[in-house]
Length: 337
Ligand code: SAM
Ligand code: SF4
View: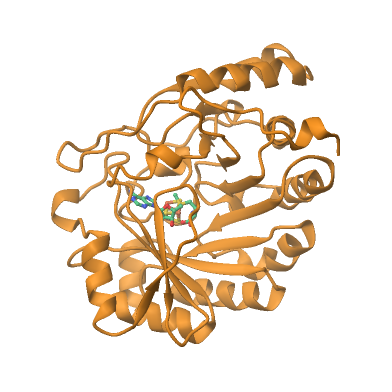
């Protein structure tokens, strides 16, 4: 690797280095979680999606500009056809670019099929969504998901040997807030970490998000009635706070996108399914990189220049407000969670 590749070159107007890209590779999903999608969804026409080859081309450019961490998400990334080819290609970027960590966020349904090949391809860590341990409720929350399949996926992931597995739970009042402690107990038993996520106002869904909103502070207070939590100093440069659960191997995290205090250390950008670079999850500032890729096929210098120039429009902070929903009309499945 040349020195050039190890020097971060993506620095915005506020001096923040961008070293982390999250990329949604499909807006499709086999689940229809109530906080994420409508029951009836119209998905993007296939020609609008970046092809797998375009995704590799794009992420290689980022990783040659100093990006060290890539997270693949969706929609459900593992329902995209030939996704194993994509991960093999991305895994190789770890030996040719500044990429250090390849990660995946999944609903777990396809892990019995893919867990082993993901580890073989070089996926270091994965996040698996799990909002309930009650099969009937799991079905209500995901509309089309089966708890048993996801539990089998978690098992497969543990056997496959990822460096770390984290569960993600979106907590909603009156829907699953009575499972906060049970979900933590499950994570501890399985030797996994767990993050609790505040519901974000992304896209129109069928319930009133004001009524279901459960703050991280409320979740933390509930956990403290049962567990001793020690604040961890580790920071991801994102909207997460972490605690070690005393006497266990598990950490608990809180993802609180409503709080503004992480914006100043933000190190990330997002890529949408159709190749739009979003400089901030809560703002519409974006650059159409698909246009650059399709207009100048194979011209990675031009693509890198467009990425470097985009740093000038990364905003200082986001602007979520749960009371004015939806703030942003994009669904999470398009921007990637
Ligand atoms: N399908 C995969 C999954 O469910 O893990 C990856 C994509 S999903 C959009 C990524 C994460 O975003 C999941 O943990 C999901 O629970 C979370 N999510 C989706 N919609 C959300 C919302 N409106 N507010 C907060 N989290 C949300
Ligand atoms: Fe699918 Fe993930 Fe959205 Fe649930 S949260 S509908 S699993 S993309």
